[in-house]
Image (cartoon, rainbow, N blue to C red; front, side, top):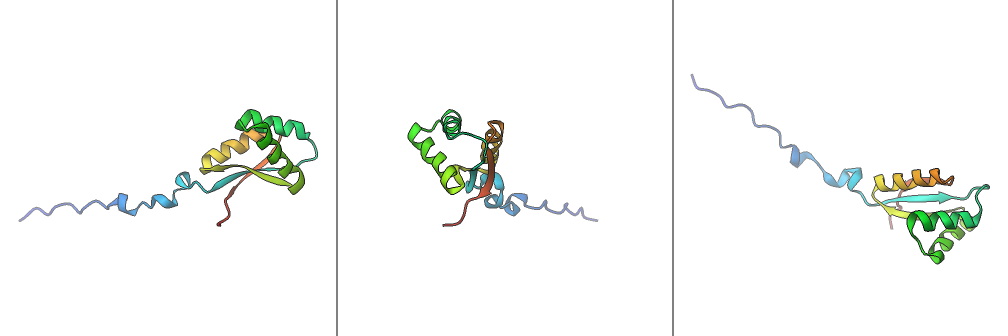
Length: 103
């Protein structure tokens, strides 16, 4: 009577597709939306203080929010974009996270 070896363990590393892992997908955006409450100067202040944008860049983004109804204020990994959106909520701004459109 021979001893049969145990079945080989599945190769879980080969089955894992890291490109599908949301944490490794850099194609996400934080979008700030226009609202009837916050002053334009306050939105510029938030963009400067939180993101570190220059006055000119913060003003450009704020004008996008004001004139177009929204502006993409950051792009990157989904988890980071969710943190940015939560920070915008903490400042009283309306923000969402979305998958970046394909070019």
